[in-house]
Every structure is written in C-alpha cells, then in structure tokens.
Image (cartoon, rainbow, N blue to C red; front, side, top):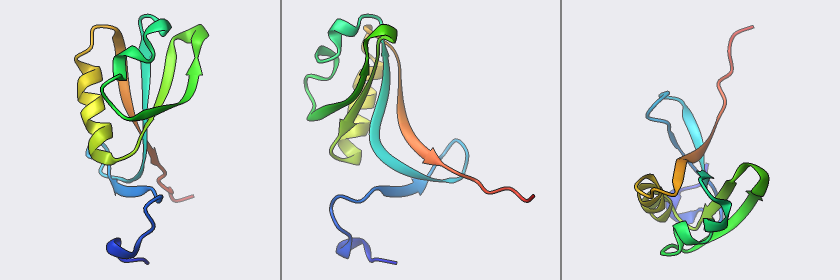
Length: 99
C-alpha cells in the first residue's frame, strides 16, 4: 500500500460508488451520448480533455479528463447541455460473489 502523498500522479483513484456502496476505480472518463456527433468538441470546449473513443454511427463519445474535479465539473455541464442525451462517469466495479 502506497501513501497518498507518495503515489505517482498517473494512478487511478479508488473510491466508493455511492449508488452501490462497492469499491470502484475512477477512470476520468465520461461516456456521452449526443443528439449530433458533429458537436463532439463543442459540448466540452470549456474543459481540458481528450477524446479517447468516438463512435460516429451511434453518436457516442468517451471523453478523458485530467482530474476528478475537472471530470465532475464537466459532468455537471454536460448534464445541463441540451445537445447531450446522457452523460455517465465511468466507474469500474467488481464484486466477487460466493460460489
């Protein structure tokens, strides 16, 4: 286990998913379904981001942000944007069940 102040800057954050109460890995990705894929750069223009994946045929974009706070600010902005059908922060979860 590495102390927080000694952790490398490029590691993924582990947190608890408030919806499931399970541990989850925060990736910094937001999956966004758009009404028009041509607006992919326009809907997040106020943020520092990279497009990780873009699926033009289904108007879906995966945006990668540099920090937790920027990701959450972008999510709030995307939720209020009329060009966005839905925006979901990616959390990786796994729960091992008894066999």
